[in-house]
Amino acid sequence: MTLKGPDPEDLRKIHAEVNQLVNQRLALTTLAITIFTAVLALLVPRDTASVGTEYGLFRYSLSILLILFEFVLFVLAYHLTSMLRTFTAYLDVTCKSGWESDWRKYRDRNPGYWGYTKPQSIIFLLVGIVAGSLPALFWLFFHIDLRPWIGAAICCAALLLYTVFVTGMGFWGWFAKENKIKERWTMILKEKEQ
Image (cartoon, rainbow, N blue to C red):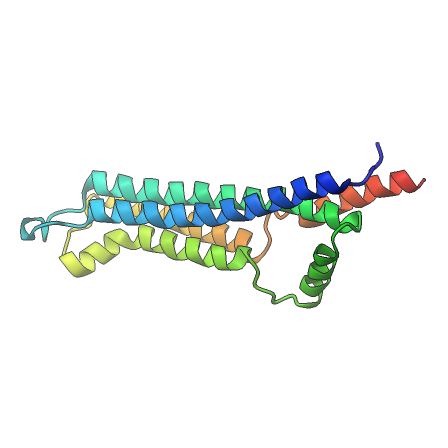
């Protein structure tokens, strides 16, 4: 199998796909914030009779499900990044986009570069940490009892795992596929040259 290279129509299609993937990542981040806000509105006590009551299994379940759902959205956005890199690495390897080549060189020379993934990870971290901290925040502001304790323990464990994985994936490149994607395209291109 060898690379034939894109024709002008292919380039238009690839650029449209790249734009669509970037927009989908932004939409997922917006969806994460929207869902967090909706669940928060559902959980907040509405009257003074709720003050001092226990947090309860229902609220713990919603907090844990919110953390899980936010993580699923983060993983999907992370997967979209891999799909995006498949297209951009192809454009770079086939020398059909000066921008992709220049941008790669810029990122290689600036290891502290904060592109799309890191700011997006910060947003997911903030939303997830607040979601996992809701029981503690409700205890602090509404004097809600944190019983049952098993709910608090599960919520803390979910928050810890969420924070570790979002930080690892977003800032340390856990499970990142960009280098492997570029290597595959380069290997296929070399087959063409032989």
